[in-house]
Each structure stands twice: as structure tokens, then as C-alpha cells.
Length: 206
Ligand code: ADP
Ligand code: MG
Image 1 (cartoon, rainbow, N blue to C red):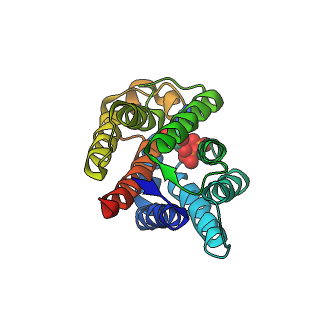
Image 2: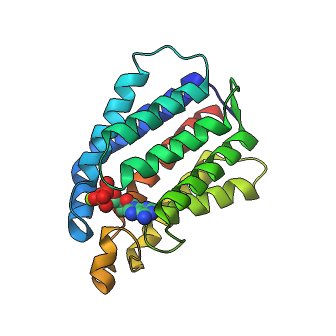
Image 3: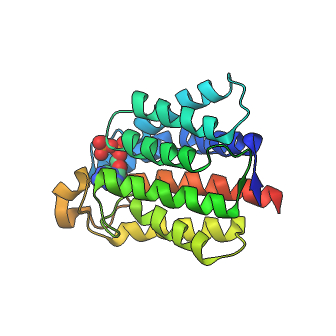
């Protein structure tokens, strides 16, 4: 597999479409166990990012990811902006000086992004945050020599769904303690959209 500038742009556009389409849904999930702004945060951030990337000419994948990172960090409030921003910044650093992202580079980029998320948010696996989706996705990439879009989508979806039965230990939902059980984690759902979109781009290549 290889992701060039156009495919990375496709990934971002597909992600943005899912976020815009599910803006109300993400907000309703966050209303149940947070402050009800996750849909607003993500839709504003990704729309601004897309506005930037669709009006810029890129020769490197690293610059695309860096512009997304800067937009998310500067335009999105809440926990999710800096967390997703850090993730994209780490990815951009790993793919620096490369025209294309191959399988090993994608694996390294997502692993570094997850490390950035963990460093910044101090959450652990199973704390009912987006870490619960990013971790199994990174594990999948590390375990497989070849990565199929359908596998990636399935792992991300199962991981997203598994957050429902967990009790939140980080983020606003942690204030609810046991009452956070029975609700999906909003950030895990938006991360699922990110990886489902990546899976679609990978499947188009297969
Ligand atoms: P806020 O919680 O500030 O209102 P959002 O609603 O946009 O920000 O994002 C909430 C999501 O961010 C949560 O559903 C969770 O997945 C993620 N999140 C919150 N805090 C952390 C953290 N410390 N580490 C990792 N992810 C976190
Ligand atoms: Mg919120």
C-alpha cells in the first residue's frame, strides 16, 4: 500500500464528510456524558482543515498533515483539538521528507501519533477515551505485514463499540463515574470515522 498526497487529501475529505454528516450524533453522545460540544468541535476543526488543504498546493504528505495539525490546534477548543492536533503533528513529523507513505511508515506515524495523544492526555488504555480506538488500530498495523481496509475498519469499529461498557477515567465523562457506563465515548466515535475513512482509501487501492 502507498498513500500519496492525493490519497491523504481523500482520507481527510472522507473523514470530514463523516464528521459533518454525524455532527448532531457526536454532539448528542457528548451531551450524555460530557458537555455536548464534540460534534461542534470536530466539525469546525475538520471543515477549517479541509478549507486550508483544498486551497493549498502540496508536494509532500508531511505538509498536508502539518497544516491539519496546526488548524486543529489553533481552531478547536476542548480536549479533542489539542489531542487530534498532536496526533497529526506527530504523523507529519514521521513522514517528513517522504513523497509517499508506505505500510511501515503508516505504522510508525500512527504509533507516534498515539504516543503523542498519551503524553498529552495522560489517559491509559480502557479509560474510555479515543485511546481505546487508537491502541488496537496501532496494534493491528504492527501485527500485520499487509493491511486490508476491511480489517482496519472492523478493528476500529469493535474498539469504538467496546467503549460503551467502560467506566470513564479521563476527560469530562470521568466525573460521572459509574453513570458513564452504557454510553459510547464521543471521541472514540470520531476516531472511528477517521480510521473508517482511512480504510476506504486503502480499499480503493486493493
Ligand atoms: P471536551 O471534553 O473538552 O469537551 P470534546 O468534547 O471535543 O472536548 O472531546 C471529548 C473527547 O476527548 C472524549 O470523548 C475523549 O475521547 C477525548 N478525551 C478527553 N480527555 C482525554 C484525555 N485526557 N486523553 C485522551 N482522550 C481524551
Ligand atoms: Mg465536550
